[in-house]
Image 1 (tube, rainbow, N blue to C red):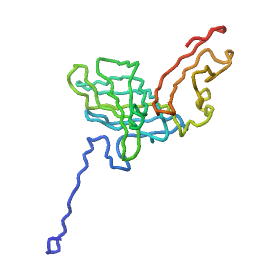
Image 2: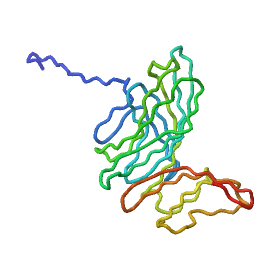
Image 3: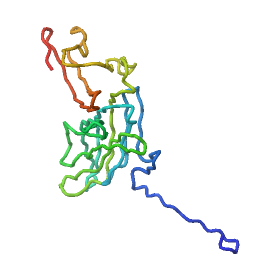
Image 4: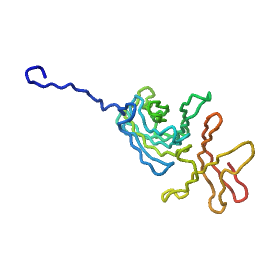
Length: 233
């Protein structure tokens, strides 16, 4: 009070142009995630601007690598809507044997116009031990204006020490999806996966490799097809 019985209040504003409000424990914003099973999830961020926005995150102990297929939507300068799609891989590991960091890269980018896709990157938020997928608006079709109105939807496959410690058969929706773990690979050749040639003509793999001595991590995609006699990769 001011001594005369009058109350006054101090206000703290929140800018809703920001895509996230984040402290050391939680993130509040325009992001969402739907967990399908231990390895699969979908999600979105409905407000990505020129600044860096958090799109998705997961605990460091959960996955070594994550594969994303991302569909982004951008509003052009004339208010027309354009779309882009990209694949993005996130891996967390160490280059020096002790300091962990996150690394990522995009591939197979397709666009409905010259407008750029959401620019993706990654980091590790040490306060929460979370690996984060980050994004910011790219350039509009004119090549110089930063995009301020973007939405991104994703499908994610995560592989790692926690949620992939055993064989997981596909669920009722993804009956042909499996998670396999080969715990010990060395210089000798070994079967990582096998399937009947009469059952499938081809298969797609997302592979996460962890050097358990150095904690170096690498990730890759593999496509396998066969003609009934020979297999090709």
